[in-house]
Image (cartoon, rainbow, N blue to C red; front, top):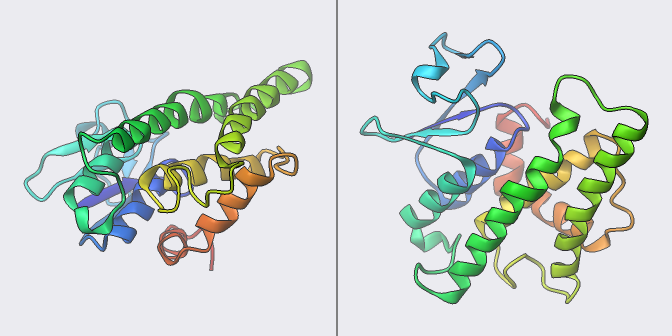
Length: 204
């Protein structure tokens, strides 16, 4: 398999999941603005919408959309226990949280990555939108659970870690969201996260 990624983007969650699963895979960086992969390929021929992540399987098929890729990895490597079993209520909770992270939390960061950072009232509005979504994450974790589904790390923790960690790069404090902040710290220490971030050149 090959993961097409952009350093620090949401594709990092898929990278972490692949590391957690112990899957055999390679990575290729994408310049999404130029629409080219690091080897010079036209990325839109691989992923027509032009954004990351994309996971190219050994038979040439390509999976796009982060939440779908994360579940594909979990289902392909079930021994890694990265997702509850299909058909269980716990799996429904995973779907619920993945959809929330993708459609609410992830999208709320959009104004900060639109090419021009928001300023003044526009920034205040954008910050409030992010904080509102993060409060939901913080509330879920407030019962003392280490991860979003409970005791066990899952693919939604990888995705939530990546997106929540963006707050540190757009100057949004997590100090009033201690449980969300602790989740970021907890996932950051996992060997899979360290390995993925190092491979993307995000840490030494």
